[in-house]
Image 1 (cartoon, each protein chain N blue to C red):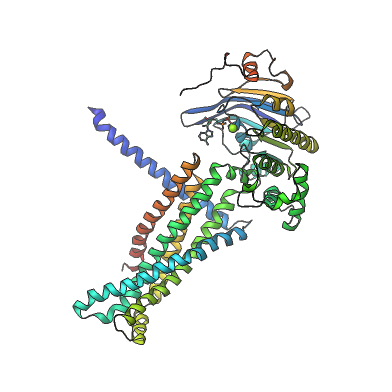
Image 2: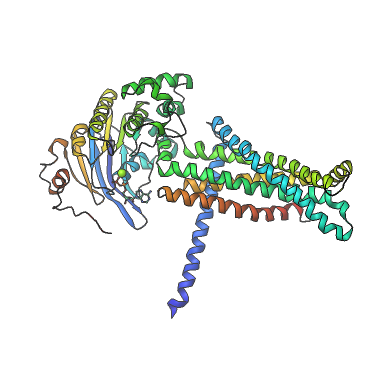
Length: 262
Length: 259
Ligand SMILES: Nc1ncnc2c1ncn2[C@@H]1O[C@H](COP(=O)(O)OP(=O)(O)O)[C@@H](O)[C@H]1O
Ligand SMILES: [Mg+2]
């Protein structure tokens, strides 16, 4: 009788403990990696390599996402706002939703798919083929060599990508606005910039930096902790993408709450 | 602290469990300076874990590990890391960095320690590759372009390039044909002799064990069950060792075929 009652409780307890252990491990991992960013030696070459990988090679997919999102936003808000004769608000709706929310979140989700997966796969493969242990025996700290440059690169690259996404998204909205919805180009652009505040842009870029850090952290952590051959690396890759996507959406709420709750 | 009689490596009562699985159950091992020691044992008997403990890649649960009479497990992290500067390791599957060309693999440690510049590293790599019988052109290839035997040689070159005074070889000849195995053994013996290093090798190839080892130790169920001259393998008088060395099915070692 007692067992029937206690077994589920024990299971819940175990799951909770497991979750706490994981969160603690990720936090310590992040702390250690960040501490390596301020202690020499620095691996500029590896940072640059990771930066190009995150920023440059994510550009096409982020750009496409941004343009289409801007176009869809303009179209959707038009069909909605026309019912209230509020078409003039479209430009500002497009720019505000892009800069505050959709730019950072969508860019981060796209990058999470690309970069989270590739970091996890690269580092996971190095783990299961003993390359990480080999680094240690070759007088090189693997956290400093593999994790720290990737964390820094993604944290810097994401805001830059989001900046591009913001511009391209507004352009997408402007295209639809002028070509399809009959706005005058100058008027559309004027109302775009009239309503945009520096705070909106900055909050979006801060979000982007946080998301970039999270993507690289989950990618490297899942890879670093992977075990069990090819299957383990596959699992690490999936976990990295899933975990960073969920964290991006959850943290987006938290950050929005912090920025705009008054 | 360290006298002429201090063993280079001394392990006492080293234990390690992964979850419920006990892998090392009190390993005692002495390796004299300049000695070639081979560790024998069945697959999964904990040979790799033993040397990973010495290297500091795995933290033992209990026990003492001394290098030159210094208890490495008690050292602060920084000093322990710097101890690794004098140790070389050839991993079971090579563990070459496939993102780097061969020459950078070979000189990785020297570059990491800032002992040479990148420009010098290429020349140095050519020199070390020559010591393991590889041509200069191999330096510019990627590890994935090499055959198994060449990868082992590059891994050997990487292990010796920084002139360590202790070198570990984890199954250096496993997966190679017998001739290539003999070649690698020869290279190992040459390199170790040239460096005057202490060498600890893991193998389950008896011919290889006799070629590269002076002393042999047999590990079984997480303990060292026998230590003796490598030449005696097969007629040591210890039933377990002789069964293992001669590859007999019947004997004190019962392989766990089903688990
Ligand atoms: N990091 C690890 N985590 C869990 N189990 C491990 C780990 N490393 C080794 N083991 C287990 O320890 C046992 C001994 O492994 P190992 O020392 O690699 O064997 P071998 O003697 O063949 O080199 C194996 O059963 C292996 O599954
Ligand atoms: Mg092994």
